[in-house]
Length: 447
Image 1 (tube, rainbow, N blue to C red):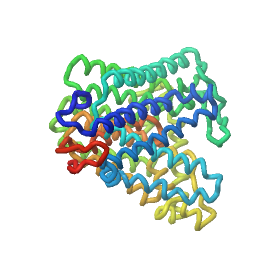
Image 2 (image 1 turned 90 degrees about the horizontal axis):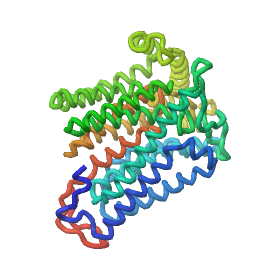
Image 3 (image 1 turned 90 degrees about the vertical axis):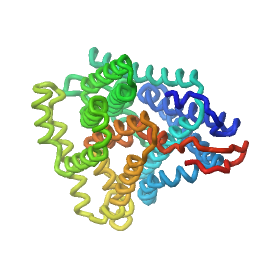
Image 4 (image 1 turned 30 degrees about the vertical axis):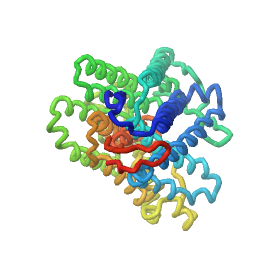
């Protein structure tokens, strides 16, 4: 934290650019918060809520302009160009305008990832006014806490705070809400979110944030706060009825425990642990999750509703459907479904609800797109940033996203936001600039 707030011995940017960077960080953070209470905003604003996507797009273009102006654009492109593969591979699908919304979603999330990476980089390279950080940080914590409280209220009353008819669509054809009951009786919680999946994802991501706090700080008091926060949000994840995030939270919790109990050994073996976690996730994706779910449910959940394996059967069927489609049309592996659909009209450009990030990537973007994303994260994992806090947040959220990806398209939920912010922290150049010229690009190359 001190590295962010402490004044620089030498200015990173010219005074005017320093101010621009501060505005970009705080405005980007504020825009990101507009995505949190999605149910609340959809309930009162309806389709108008998508103005936030326009704001996000404008912010992204402003960041690109600022990176170009200050000489950071080339560095950002060298590290993040892998992310462009996905949008390019789904672009042919818009020949049929019926696929435009699905294609736009892919483009939107790629822009969001890139925007958050740039936000992380700027947060490291500029002096952030503590008052602004406290205000936005407190607002973030407040939104997550109120979201959890709203979910707990739904659990007690069995009534939604903001009820949006399940399956109702906006004028653009986007599903506005999704509601669900557990066993035909208890509502599946969604708090301030528009659907039950987003609520479970945010509760899981918030639990990982608590684990990150406990792992970063060396003070016992803050560690206790981190573990208590992780336990409370983890409890809400359990009560929500959504179990997709359990794999991710469990993986992040194991890493957090290892980093605190055996820090040296954990750091030495972390890259191998990431490889093992990826191998496990791919194995489960290909061979099914039902038997593993039954085993874990028998151990941890006994006869609780959270231990029901009914959804595991459904996921296995969904995954088998995706795999069968790929086997039936092997061209999908080489080019992704959008390109394959141009060559064979029997191929569906988009497969709804794959319920698995890995199979979703392979189907829609083929092996080239999936491999590009894997190489992007490998490059981020291999980079030695020298910023311990960012490294820990990156590892915990990478385990979380990879684990949740076994049973959900985890890269298109807000819970992945901290992962990309941490990548931006890690990609930021070290402070080694001899001269900064006002209004012009610096002459010294950043390292």
